[in-house]
Length: 365
Ligand SMILES: [Ca+2]
Ligand SMILES: [Ca+2]
Ligand SMILES: [Ca+2]
Image 1 (cartoon, rainbow, N blue to C red):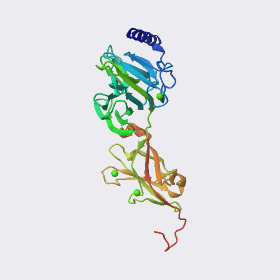
Image 2: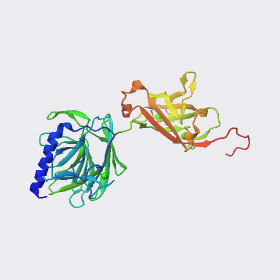
Image 3: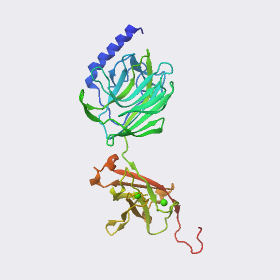
Image 4: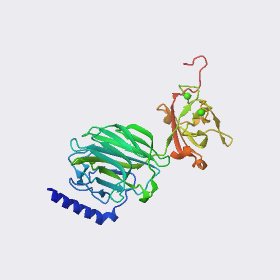
């Protein structure tokens, strides 16, 4: 294809995009795209993808891929980025996205992954990754740019952001490794004078307009989903014991401490919602056996919960771990520490014993 044909094809595609512009369907979460359902050389099929800025082109290719046999290839002009996106039908308070990206070994310079929009002739992006072939680096741009690690052109790299729009922070991952926590992000919706009310619901991939003649980048295995709102908390089965032996044949209660931290207020736990290995908190009359106490002496009150040993499910403990699940009290949902969600989970290792009756003088310990 010579350049004139290419421009003509680009113009045709642009027309097609403009004509069908209002018809693009918003995608539901979870959204997964591996580009296997489109023939080589074509724009992704269906009404999912929309072109935002047209550079040299975007099409599904069989030349490079991470999974299956295809990926999405984007190529920009020096002054025209190639940007393509999907519209999300919802923006949950906890949203994660993941994408695999590969910069062409010789002609790949910069790939961008995240939320994008158009304002006149500019293309602002929010909460996006930048994979830079010239600088050999991966960074993330939320409220500011954060360097995350190195990258070598020609390799596939997987980036992931867990966005928490309540605390306005993100956890960031590169190739499955947690490389950033508490990174400040841009809100889901905000007011920006030149653009008015901005809703960051267009997520996609881009080949940045660099000064190189061609900037060829590949994307595969795109994934967006509503993140778990489960909080992970620190617990201690049998405070004071490090081995945490549980004699499943015994009567009585098993104490478990749930610790407070700077980001979690254990005093807001609803004991009636707590379960340890399937057992509810023991009752004394109608009251749950729970009390507040600063067990670790850090100045923050922790919660001591008592569970009936006979109610514990041996099967759930058989792996050597006791898992506690529960919820915070509903009226406390405005409390800052519960911003990540009302449910929590914690676990501790235990050593099981099954003695029915201990024979005096013949204890094995
Ligand atoms: Ca694929
Ligand atoms: Ca313990
Ligand atoms: Ca404490």
